[in-house]
Length: 115
Image (cartoon, rainbow, N blue to C red; front, side, top):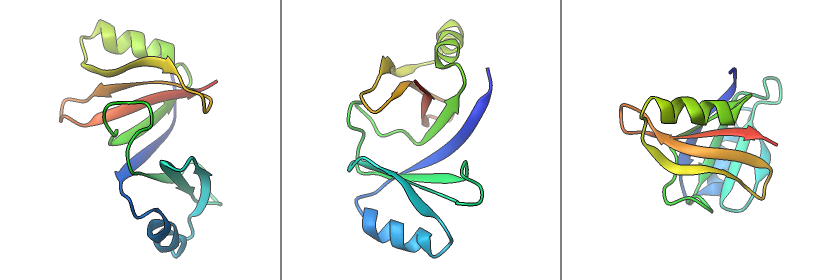
């Protein structure tokens, strides 16, 4: 299993303000579903930050997202090790397969793969 990218998720209602502020640092909007917006560096597209009011299909807002090349393997490893699964593995309508797991510090991590 390989990590493709790691994205901090900032809970915020100030989407436009964050787009403008981080735009001053060179970030550009690469995704916006209304409830989540992701900004990325044009020169390093995996350097990203997301802003979300709340998660559309999950009971909590994750603190970060980790994209892996095999989300099913990641899910199996986490369950096998007894990690707390906060949101079950599922396919989402926007093209990702994901689950949430709590890390040892109590942070919620959205582990995902694109379909």
